Length: 294
Image 1 (tube, one colour):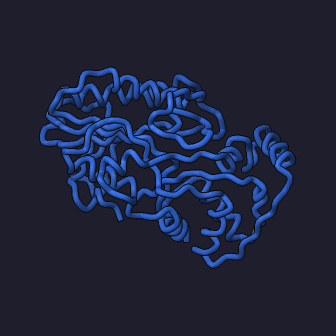
Image 2: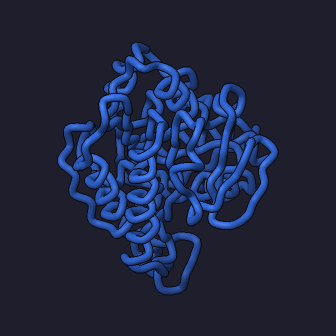
């Protein structure tokens, strides 16, 4: 259930004409102006070009969408009467790989066009003068999931449901995830609580999970049998390299996402909100997402 849909009047921005039953109004982003924000309290900027698994996009496309579009919206916000701007960036604006635990003190050094375009947008915001009556938040979520999710969770789900053994069990990793419920909870708190200071916040569920644990959660949620194979990692990496050339489901990008360590600290945001734990546990959030696949 979405906190935002229940507690706010929503106005949407789209690239093309579109209607949604839960929105009070919609605008084409290219036509947006300061006058359109009359009566708007908060802007949540979610638009962006995500990772290109097939590697078909160039750096300019990421720059145009992730960087320049953010600059446009932020400049309009600064001229408007809106008081809160929330930019949903990414942990990949900081680091593509993580040794240990990623915190907000980590010096950004993104290596991909995606991460670099997100980082440039962050820098533009951070280098701007923020009026005292406005609060600006840069949220860096890890992998977000929820009902209707697309991507690697769906791939894992199909493996387990069809009884196909999961061949990557030899990779012992830990990775942070973010339930859409927890993200909505945080955004609601940032908008409603004027005492929460603006700034940069990592966003993740409370507990990091291994891919093997996720396989077990999928099996639990769907009452499927667990089949884990510990194949030689060198062989798996060779197969993934072949997948890059032949466009197979398993390629090096997907292998990285499924097996890498990427643990994100959420202590700063919880301290700012004055809470010990987020409302949705890592396991229950994944169960909710996985059950939606049925």
